[in-house]
Image (tube, rainbow, N blue to C red):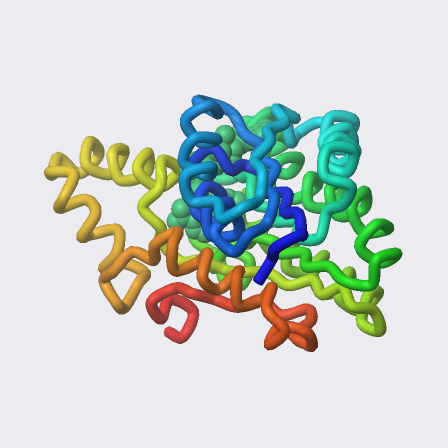
Amino acid sequence: MLKGKTALVTGSTSGIGLGMAKALAAQGANVMLNGFGDHQAAIAEVQAAATGGSVAYHGADMSKAAEIEDMVRACEARFGRIDVLVNNAGIQHVAPVDEFPVDKWDAIIAINLSSVFHATRAALPGMKARGWGRVLNIASVHGLVASANKSAYVAAKHGVVGFTKTAALETATTGVTVNAICPGWVLTPLVQKQVDARAVAEGVSVEEAQRRLLAEKEPSLQFTTPEELAALAVFLCSPAGNNIRGTAINMDGGWVAQ
Ligand code: NAD
């Protein structure tokens, strides 16, 4: 479905972004990966999933506007275009407001929110000129509702949902759509840290900490998987997604229905 198209997926060396990159590559797209950690392993995984497209990597730090711009230009130079932009890179820090480290606040706002603006701003002119594009912003249920001790994350993700609506309005008469995807719990390294911290704090096993984490917020008592989220991304890239604009679609086991 995406043969001849190019996807740039930020934060795709791990977790949800890696799942998105594999699914888009499986649809035939060229994919540019980004993120920290073992990017060679991520490249190999995405290459194994690919069906004709090529895989590239750029190590831009998503807290740095100039590096984001450079990544977008490098992707356009390598593949001639960006058709699908998945703004996915994100970090978490958990602490009450009055104990929240200022540097963590700044980093979360930069990586989880401002990078969405910087990448979209740089990629949008090419999409508009070609008359087709998909911007998929990986927000969170925390773009729709709050949890205690996640002020920076909740503020950033609500910001992503608001940015998504504005960008969707500005592109409403074009072939470019902009939407947000709002996962509940997904068992990635970002969440494993929270499970491990809970196991220690409550003196329980990791399995019990996982069960408690789900029971608190997610009625299905199941983690959403990167593969399920990636299937939603592929759907939004299909012709069925042509007029889905400015939405925040939650895949959250019933979290925000409560
Ligand atoms: P993860 O930790 O597995 O992956 C995060 C990715 O972002 C990694 O590739 C990492 O290298 C990259 N990254 C982090 N900081 C970066 C930076 N400064 N520059 C470039 N890359 C950077 O986490 P995940 O759970 O897959 O999270 C992906 C996205 O999904 C995030 O935006 C997160 O907020 C969102 N999300 C996750 C969950 C969940 O339950 N895991 C739920 C809702 C939303």
